[in-house]
Length: 311
Ligand code: RIB
Ligand code: CA
Image (cartoon, helix red, strand yellow):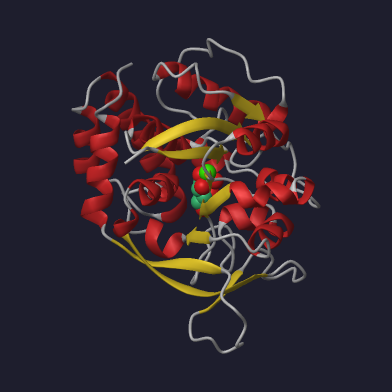
């Protein structure tokens, strides 16, 4: 099978960093580009972090497009309490050895999608600002997008407010544009990513993978510390890596088609993804929503993919 071409849209972020490593290590994927968005930390830092991770794993060949520094219609909300001031606190990472692509995120996405001989899968793991802007500015290129497999949303409780998951909370207007795009969407929400908690055993498995695994283990160790403080849990969920792993091996998820609407008006529940599990609204489904994760299979994809990387 030819590898699946993907573009990752990220806001590193510890779990984005592991998602980037997984994507670059997995032989089933061909990473055509990485685009950066403001989210966990401001854009300059998410971009620096994406470049540092790619430099660490020797992937300076992957073009990095710098995207939106703020949501479409709201001030930026960040998560230094989880990811630290740099957005990748924990291990010492060398400064980037290459510069971002001069075209910016949306132009880079458009050029690569237009030029691709086969449809591209978009894998956003941050706020959906860049993807929404791309879809709005280049609607005719939708026909060369195979699917959007996004980490975001929740059928149940949120993690940023009781109602909203971080990525959708930060830019609900962008999320609404993406979910109304008509493109095939797989929503990898907190319902399944909370099954991907990386505890001490996972950290040791990562550490045993060699130099890149050691950095991943240090990232998760830091992530575990802040996660424990904020959420009282010892095993931080590697949210974003689940979305990438689901492209590598779709069978790790059990999904169901349903209508998903995004709350943009309410002060109280802004960013909530309302998932019509039972079809009460009788509206056509607009997403495959992940209901269950095969946790063991996910971690095997993670370890196997990172094991392919050399620092
Ligand atoms: O809610 C978790 C998501 O928000 C993850 O993508 C994390 O990196 C943050 O972006
Ligand atoms: Ca993220």
